[in-house]
Structure formats: structure tokens, C-alpha cells
Image (tube, rainbow, N blue to C red):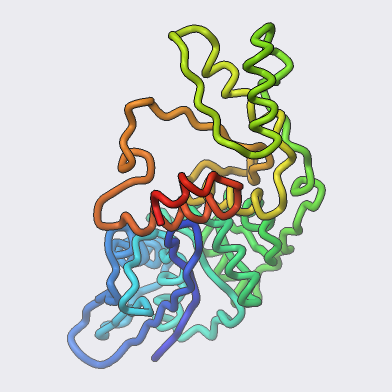
Length: 311
């Protein structure tokens, strides 16, 4: 018996679609996962086995193979837990699960509770582009819905299975337009700066033209204090800037139901002695970080000279 389900992995700040193909054939009983699975993805089959056992579902004594396609794309995510468990349940009980038109992304605990995963927002953007509905954990529901995709959030594996079998009714989550359009509120304000008239004028001119600024001075004269307040005098974020920034925060795991979308310009204060590698990352996946950095440069008017250093 063969079944195929859809999921996604994160590359940079974008979601890449993948297919979870599961097939059971005659042979020595075994359960293998292939398709360049590594890290959390490779362990998904073990979590799925315990979830099925605790849900009263027994795997058939057959040779079962789980393929994560495309095979040449590295998968390092626990988001495939849910689709793998659903596929195994389908071939175990010969259930006719309607998985067409859905994209699944959720981690599973051993007792079947759905846990949130990073990068749900870009996965929602991908699902919307592909015309798919998104099934996630309850904790990821609001973040996913803000991407504009039809979203269903569940607490347990049994609820998802019942929904796909038509035994459980579930209302889709709607996009909160007002939240998306909400003006960002900052904790600080440029108006708080007293004195420093020449510096404030220079900062105002630089901010108006999206120019770079180099501040030099002894410790304690107010460089960081002023820099932290520069985002408060910049224009409100555009829709593309909100989308890109929210993607970055989603991939890093900084979003939650209380803070599902970023509408304020971020501020970072790396140490003055930080190297390029410490800022953008390194190792064998350096191209992911470079892609993320270039995406940020394209969505904000960063100086061309600085951008050219990483081209």
C-alpha cells in the first residue's frame, strides 16, 4: 500500500515543498526512512511509532519504507513528524485518509500531542502559493493564519486523524487583517534624546535617505542610546518588509501567538569586534545565511557598497 503526503522544510528564510512517500511491501518487518533525512527528521519515525502505539494502532509486519522527496534536498526538521505518523496510520489500519490539498507541519510528542515548529510563517506562504490548506499545532495556528492560508490548528494527533476521516469538525482560522495592518509601537522614542543637537540632525538626515552612519566617541556619550532610537523615526514598514522580517523571526523561533507578526523595525547591537562569520554564520551551510542576508538587503535599502561585500 502506498500513500503520499505534503510537508515542507526551511532553506534560508523560504519554505521548500517536500513529499512524504510511504509504502508497505512483503519482506522482513522493518521501518526505514530515506531521502537525505538528518537530525530531527531522521528521528521522526521513532516518534511516530510510539504515537501510533499510544493511539492503539499497530504497524503491520511488513517492510515499510518512508521516502522524503526530493532525495537530494537535506531535511533537518521535526515538521515531518505529523505527516509520517498519518501515513503510517493509513497503511496500518487501511484507512482512507483524505490528505489531498493539505500541507502538514507539526512535531509530535510520544503521547500524540502536537508541538510547534519553527518556520511556520514561510510554510504558510508556501501553502498559499500552492493552493493548499495547512494543518499545524494549536500553538502555531495564529502565526500560520497570518500568512493568509486556510489553517487548521489541533492539539493532538487523534484530533487530526479524526478530522481527516470526517469524524471531527474543525473551523478554519481566519486572517486578522487589522493585526497585519497594525502600526508598530516602540518601547523607545527618538524624542527622548536630550541635547546632542548636531548628532540628532545628522541621524535625521541619514534616516531620511536610508544612509549608513558611523558614530565615534568615548564610552557613555550616547552612541548606543541614540542608535536604539533610530528605528522610531524611520517610515512604517512596508508589506514586503513585514513579510521578510516576520519570516526571519519565524525561522529563528521568535514568534508565538502573542507576537505572531513583526511590525516594528528590528534593532541589533553586535559587538564592535564581531567578525563576518559571527554575524552571518559559517560552516557547511554558509550559503543559507548568505541567502538570508541578501533577502534582508533586498527588502531594505542597504548601502550598495556594504551589499557588495557578500555578493
